[in-house]
Length: 103
Image 1 (tube, rainbow, N blue to C red):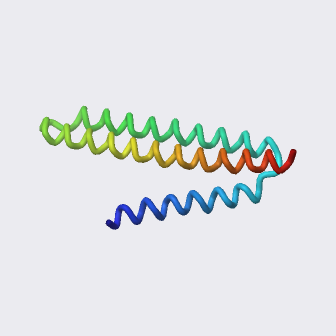
Image 2: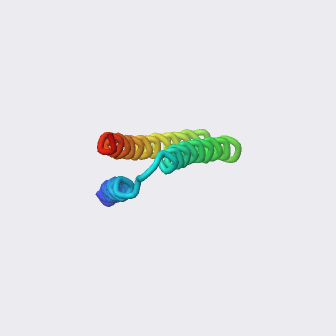
């Protein structure tokens, strides 16, 4: 239950950040910077999980533990990808909203 609350809190934080972004966007350069930042975040997360997977494969000898650890890494990776995708969707909505307001 505590983990679920943590994810809800994280989602609320993303929502609050989206609101702040909405109030601070003023030009295309900021939007491009945000897109680049999100892409860099996704790339960094992907690299980190790939490295973690490789470390588990290289160091854990017990096959059962290795399988459990790799499954956990995969679940964490999928969860983070979901969070980042949610953030991208929320930011996209804010950006589209701002672009509509400016026109």
